[in-house]
Image (cartoon, rainbow, N blue to C red):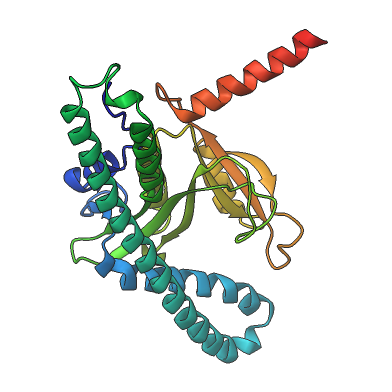
Length: 294
């Protein structure tokens, strides 16, 4: 019995980087296609600056429309807010990518140790190494490290090497009742966050192309759905997501007082032997047992 690699993070990394997927048509007819790739540690600064520029502008645009006489003051506020976001996002993204690299190396070491032990004891143990407590412990450790690797930042860049769009994906509990660091027992899902597109590249299909890349990655990670949040007042983004097959699953809890968001989800075909398929089968079995008892 060989070691089963259920979390195929390596396939996700190779799939995106090897093909260097081009977003054909994202910038309109006659324009050069963009290249989508996974972010490196060196990309943390440019990605964070793009996110900060977009987020800061969104936060101040509403006030500009309501009080145009505050434009000068809002420009200063936007610059300060953008600088703060850049610093925080750069630190968070660099930390997440470093943790992923460390977990990848540890996972590879554990898998090599497992395979070595399996070959060494193939003819010595009844039932093989896979049935021993040591093998079970190693499999648990490998699964833990593989889960820690499930983070990725995708970016799109033009021919000049400028980053014009980015998105981060991770495994989290999007419908948790309480925010981190409070514990939750919910099921971790494939979550899409920090989706940004540079202003001069909007309304050209780039956001849709980035979401498609996220869905491909979710399938490689054996996930049954993709999840994201969208602002209650963001009618354009809501229309985009609904057109791509997303549906509303909830709304932000009471402690989100500044801006409420809808929680959207898109179902994906369940891969064979997916943990989400097993969760669903277990849930249906429990429901059927409860009905039979009645």
